[in-house]
Amino acid sequence: MREGVYQVALPGGDSGWIGSSGVIELSPRAQTEEVSSRYFVSSVLTFVNSKYIQNGMSIDGASVNGVVYVSAEVNGIQIPRTMEEQAKAGTEIIPEPDAVTGKIMIDQILPGDIIFLSNPKDPNDKSIYEMAVCTDTGTLFMISPARTTVRLRNFSSGDAICERIITIRRIFSSKVT
Image 1 (cartoon, rainbow, N blue to C red):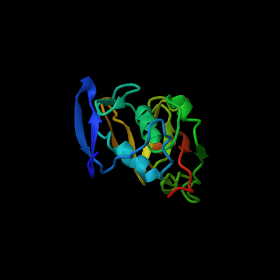
Image 2: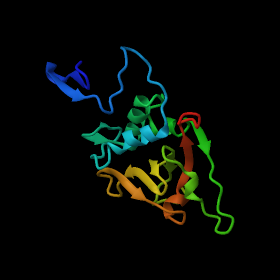
Image 3: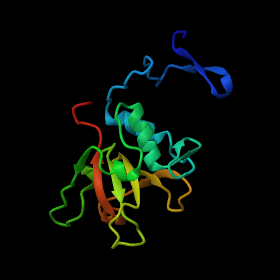
Image 4: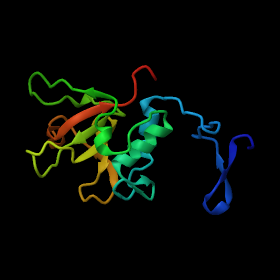
């Protein structure tokens, strides 16, 4: 390693060089320490507009559960691999409804929270159909409606997506900033 540069092994036995910006250096078999949810969100955002592939975990093809798994792991949180198991991870968040409208106040859904949603075509089915990651107030990382890419989607308190929320999970502790 030179100052600010790492030599890395590439597929096929080649080697290359990368800058140290954004790189976490660990000794072999070391555990990563939990960081704040903003680093998790930053990791998730690197996958925006990737092709959707069921259970995918790379820039070449990703699913929301695959992105959550990879992004959590590199930021110090061990999480299950499947969407169903991820829906049980962390702490459940139950947002308070607005006293006047009765609708969910989305400012209680924090960046890094994972939202599990029912099927938009069957409002009576309350099983988990898909998931999303809150990347900012009113913004979700999720599968596109055509199910071809993973992308960002804006939403608000009165949005139909709020009616589809089954559970919201917070996987990062509030103690880490």
